[in-house]
Length: 344
Ligand SMILES: *Cc1c(COP(=O)(O)O)cnc(C)c1O
Image 1 (cartoon, rainbow, N blue to C red):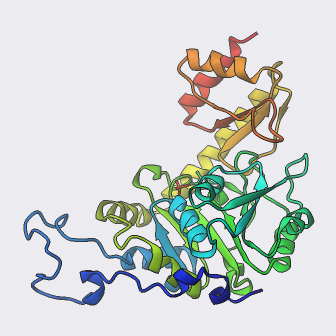
Image 2 (image 1 turned 180 degrees about the vertical axis):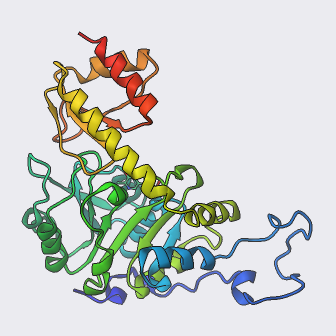
Image 3 (image 1 turned 90 degrees about the vertical axis):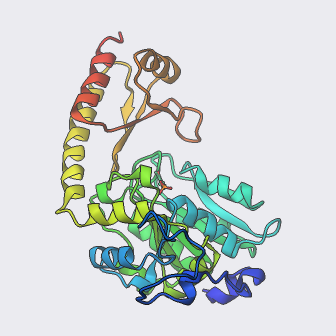
């Protein structure tokens, strides 16, 4: 692969980052008169730690990965945007992405005026490494993968992912937003083997904290340092850092949620499979179910009338006729099934 330095945009390679007051002095002190903060209203009067050291220390223990390999963002969406801004020259470079997949790769690329080359998954939603590599050219800086993929729900064959990692000389972003629900292992342990790999995870799904906006990117130190240089100095606010630390110190709350959601998912799938209007329920490794029906719009509107909102994915490539349903609480899932029972 090419060196990180080589892949970076020249302006980013040469960027001198903003140096904040909390950057220049970060030790213990009795009196802080360096940042023009109001001395009253502690602790919210103070700027947060720009590098989220305490939170990273905790995440480092849980994920068994060095703190220097962790970037925290305002959702994984921030990491997606920063990756594009770090490596892709607007109007010149491009990214390659699987299709269908999460919509933010395309939106971030569009905002930054970066072309997206889309490569369809196979009809059974598997990754085709060869087709993906074939779509790259000398201006392709990043390949975006997502496993388990959204909206298809499946994990990709590890051998295909490996072929992409080995066959591409640029950056590979692997979005693992749903990995905590999957039987497959995260690629985190393989980070050392693949210096071009960036893994995204999030507190928005299994961790139950979409509202606090906290996403993680894991990569070799050289990439993380570039991300830290580009981000807004105080991108993770105090409330978010505190709330995340609180939940992370609880005893396996996330694991319990995941176990319950997977049980609920099983019940939901079995019930959906008995419905006449359901042609197919796709296998899923995530906390949602994709189903195929001859009348997606009718079912979508029928549910909306009953104040139940699912996601209509029927206009998405390879997902013709598909609705995506998130697994809810037992009560919510029961309401959904009861509503569908009334559909003849
Ligand atoms: C939900 C989701 C995310 C989460 O994004 P955040 O900005 O961290 O909330 C990321 N990737 C995929 C594929 C998702 O479905």
